[in-house]
Structures are given as C-alpha cells and as structure tokens.
Amino acid sequence: METTLFFLALFTLGAFIFSTIVMWFGHRTIKSLDKISPPPPITSPKVSILIAARNEEKHLAAALQSVLQQDYDNFEVIVVNDRSTDRTGEILDRMARANSAVKPLHVTLLPPGWLGKNHALYCASLESSGELLLFTDADVVMHPVTLRKAVHCLLAEQRDHLTISPAIKMPTALLKLFAGFFNMAFFMYTQPWKVRDPRSDKFIGIGAFNLIRASTYHAIGTHQAIAMRPDDDMKLGKLVKKHGFKSEFLHGTRLIHVEWYDSLNAVVKGLEKNLFAGLDYNLWAVIQGTIANLIFWVWPFAGGLLTAGLTQILNLTIVVLILLIYGYGAGIGNLRRWYGIGVPAAALFFIFLLWNSTLKTLLNRGIHWRETFYPLAELKANKV
Image (cartoon, rainbow, N blue to C red):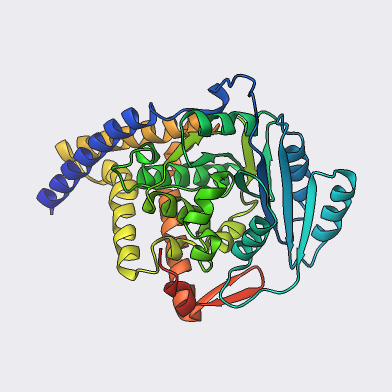
C-alpha cells in the first residue's frame, strides 16, 4: 500500500508540474479585455445584441441598462421574453418604450425539438440585421467600453468568434470558493489559450459573451445545429472550430460580471441540466471525472496528513502547487486566494453535482429546465 501511495503521489506531482508549466505559459498569451485600447473606428460594423430572458425580473433591468450604455455607435438590442410567468415581459416592454434601440419579442409557445433558450436566441437572430451578433445572458452587466473593445479585438485579430469570461458574483464565501474551483477546473479542462490555434481542437464558448460574425453563425448552422444542447454556449464555440473558423478567448473579469447563483441549492439546481450534457451523456466519462477529481484535488490534501516520509513530502508539494494554481486563477477572477484551502471540499461538492446531474437525467429519462421537460433521447440525438 505504501509503495502504491508513493507512486500515486509521484505520478500526480508530475502531472501537476506539467500542468502548472503549461497553464503558466498558456495563460500569459491570453489578453485581458480591459487592457485593449482601440483607436476610434472609421466605421463601426452593426452589432445585434441578442438576449433570451425567461423569468428574469430580478436582473433584466440592470443588465439591459448596461447594454444600452455601451460606448458604441451602431448596435441594436433584441430581447426575447421566453414564456415568462413573472414581470419580465412588462419590464422589457417598458424599457423598449423608453429606448428605440430595444426590440422586444414575446415567445408564447416552444416548438418541438428545441430547448427554450436556444429557440429564443434563434428567434432573435432571425430579427437581427447586424454584421456581428453578440449572444449574452439576461443577468450579465457590462462596463460601457466592453462592446467597443471586443469588436476592435475581433476585427484586429481577424477572428470569426470571440468569447469573454466574466467575473462571477456570489454572495457567500462558500459560493465564492466553489466558483474559484469551478473556474480553475474549467480552464484546466478547456485550455482556452489553445482556442486560437487552428491546429488544436480545443474550443470554448461562454454564455455571458459570445460575439460572432453573422456570416459565420449562419455557416455553422445557427442555433438549429445545437437546438437541444443545454451547453449551447460551449457547443457554439465547438461548431466555430469544427467548421474551420477562427476563435478567440479573452479575460473580461474587470469589465463584465454576472450573478451566478445565490445559494448552494441554486447551484445544485442550476448545474443539474448541463454537467452530464457537457460530457455528452457518457457515464464512463462521469466515472473517469470522479476518479480524476478524487486523485488530483482531494487525495493530496488527505495524503499530506495521512502519509509519512517522502510520500507525505510529495503530497504536500502537490498541495502547494494546487494553492498556487488556485491563487493565480483567483487573482484573475477577483476572488480571494486563500479560498484555495477549501479545494478538497469544493471538489467533493463538484463530484456530488456531477452525479446529481447524471443520475437525475438517467432516472428521469431527461431534464427539467425552467418548467419544461426535455426527453433524454432527444437530447442525446443532438450530437455536435
């Protein structure tokens, strides 16, 4: 057993050293949106900002107001009230009457073969007239310079798609700890510094900010190609790379923020629909993910306490690297670095979330999302 634990620690340390080096050099190539200083444009391509809103009365006014305050001279805003049962439609109509840039759409029926949000965004795209399309969420707040900087980056870098990571706002230390862990694991998995490399199959898309050329959007099949994908934002990025178009990722935590979830229960419910989907409903991938999380994020902390000698030193070294990686990501995400001591707890919570998503999807033969049921057979059929 001691020999097994030693080689496990040695293997894990080697993996972390390699990952730390790769991440360090990789992240240094990623630009931050706030550091971009675009010159005044000669002409500004029209941007259609497309938002799907279902029961968003809490966030919609602030998010939409931040969009309307963008320091950009050529944009339209199309917001789809997707079968809301709260005051979302009322708020949207009121803001549309006050600002002619806002075009409200009201969807009352969801056709077969569509997830609600994907259908709403597709409907918005049909009404759009912009050369560029910005898909964003109804709870995202942007600094006034966000759009101008993003458009400049997309054009200057000759990209077809640009996605930007926001700062995640959560009210408690436990939630912020989990947000930091989720971001760290997500970026290690997606390796966003490889997204711009046409030789790499790595892709990314973030629902808070997906900017894409309208011509590219139509060439990849629009949201019709991902009509039944709960992870539509990521799969939009995958389609861009799959069809040979050029994608880009930026950090935007100083200019964009979103209130993710306000309680642990909300995290459980919110991620129930898409964690299993993100693994393409593959049970073996869930098992592999569980083992990997236990080995890389939980055991080194336990091993640092329960082992002895050289094995303990190796485990403690891994813990230091984990804290460094977490701290680096926390600095980018405007989170406290010392939250890294809670990584094992966050990893165990993530494993619970993964299995909760998996088992509920399998047992229910589908997912419940925003008062609508979507059969598993239809979800699995939409392969990307």
